[in-house]
Amino acid sequence: MKPTDRMIQEELRREAANLPIPPDMWQQINQRLDQLPQVVPQTSRKRLRLAHWRTAVAVAAAGLFWLTVVPATRLADQNALRPAVPGRAAAAATEASNDNSGPYRSAPIQFTPHPHTLAAAAAATRVPTPLQ
Amino acid sequence: MMAELQQVRTSQDASGLIMRCQTGDRAAFEELFYLYRDDVYRFSYLVVRDTVLAQDVVQEAFLKVFRSIHKFQFRSSFKSWLYRVVVNEAITILRRRKLKEDLDPAPEANRTEAPAREWQPEEAALDSEERRLLRWAVGQLDPVHRTVVVLKYFHDFSDTEIAAVVGCPPGTVKSRLHRARELLRASMARRLGRTDLIALAYAQLVEQPL
Image (tube, rainbow over all chains, first blue to last red; front, top):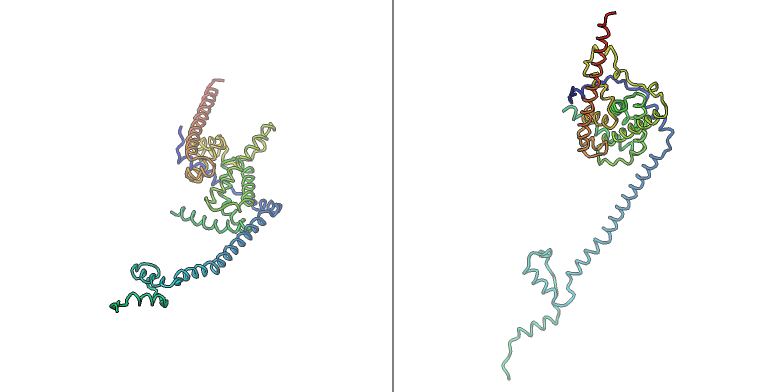
């Protein structure tokens, strides 16, 4: 005789269904829980407290980053754009107008030519006069 | 469909309860206990085949769950995790009982089996011979094979779920199930053969002229 899967399933379920559940199991467990040292809740609370601390530290770190690193980066970007050498701004403006794809392409660049630059330009454009 | 919905609802209910239990909420743990009590008790009984031992298994398993629920991290299903604890507890209790039986030569008197699994005359009218024989044969399986049979046929666990519960690869589960079916068949055939022999001897005895 070979027992089929269905037969085994039905038989186990029938046997389990006829089994009365003892009503006082929770009371017994509860008594045992009362005798347990309160290790679990303490551990859990400790873990929770640790998790709160971690969150607080992460938020503080993010705030600090926002207040220090982000303004510093902006300042560095501004310094990179500011003309440090006379004539450099003119070259940057020419470059920006040629290459219209950079992040500062729409930003108009204001510059004041240096007097030496103006003098050099005037010298270059001056028409030579015949030898006297 | 209804069973699936029920399962989804149960797992959702359980998630909230588990999180509360993890903070040491005893009321939540009581709810969790009642959510799984019937299934766990029936499973324990089918594995240990003794009502008192089954109660011990449930009690110890839930105490263990309470002590270590903060370690549960929702990576696997809670049901699998719970049944793993229950299976380990059942095996431990059965081993302890076997050890006790080896030391104490009169163990049978202490057993408290549910009346349904005994071979009783009134059941004969209701149950077919095959069914009673099968019930007896399941009781004859060793705990390891009985556990996979109960998880498979009573709880409808998949091979993968059983593997997660008993802590072995799914291939091993398949081979254990196959072996369990073979053992059931063999012990039923053996019992039937012996019953046939007794019936034959009885018939011969009755037919003998006084």
